[in-house]
Each structure stands twice: as structure tokens, then as C-alpha cells.
Amino acid sequence: GAVHDERLAAFFAAQHDLLAGEHAFALVCSQRYDDGARALEHHISGLGSQRIPPYLLNALGFAHYHRRDYSASGDAFGQATEADPNNPILWNNLAAARMVVGDIRAADDALFRTLDSAAGKNCQFHVEEYHMRVFQYNVQNLATRARGKAASLPSVELWLPA
Image (cartoon, rainbow, N blue to C red; front, side, top):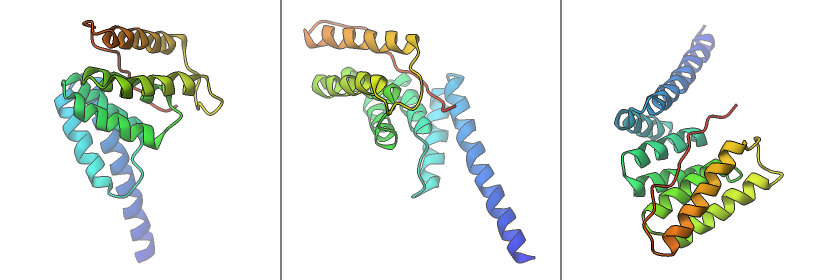
């Protein structure tokens, strides 16, 4: 009856939302940053007051970063860290965006949170040696920038929950 139809409609709507987010994430993974950013922004705006998955916010920041819109990338990474404050990859990415816009203090604070959360008991996944090398590279990058010297772009990473 009507209740079954409503449940079925709700199920398909939820599946559509999930697939739309995954499609947008895939666009970013395939380095289609303009398309991915547009699709993520559309998807996120459609979620309204629902909890936005942090990996999608991170993908949006990643796309903006590679589009050289560092302010927008910092905003998305910042939202991601609010949604998942114990994720060192998100903090690393926020630090990178802050470095590029010249906010050395905010980048330093975010890198501290990166290393603190990577070592903390609340970290929800195992931080691989690769990620530790990325974090260390960004610490060195920040030190170079803090001394007023030119530095290459800091590293940002995509992340997908297991």
C-alpha cells in the first residue's frame, strides 16, 4: 500500500543521494576537478541539514586546491575537520591550504593537529608510513615558508573511509 510505496521512495532517494556523492567523488579521483567540484557543490547543497560525509568535503577541498582556488579549498577542508576532528589527513590538507594563502599560524596549528591526531588514540584508522612522509614534507614546507623562502606546493591527499 501507501506505506510500502513511501518506504520504497525513501529508499531510492537515499540510494540516489549516495550514488550522486560517489559519482562526484569519482570525478575528483579521475582529475576532473572542475566537474567534480561542481558536482560536489550541487550534491552537498542538496543535502540540506543532513550530515555531510567528511570524505566528500575533503574531495571538494582537494578539487578546489587543484583548481588553485585555495581559499575555497581551505573552507571545505575546515568543514571536513569540524565533521571529523580526529582525522589527520583532513588536518594536513587544511594546513596545506592555509600555507598557500600565507596564513602560517593557522597552517602551523593545523599541522600540529595533524601530528597530534595521527598519534592519538582517537584516530579511527591506521596512519601509513606514506602519510607520515606527506605530513613531514608539509612540516618542512611550512618551515621554509616561515623563513620567508619560496616553497613548492604542499601535499594534499584524498581519503575514503573503509
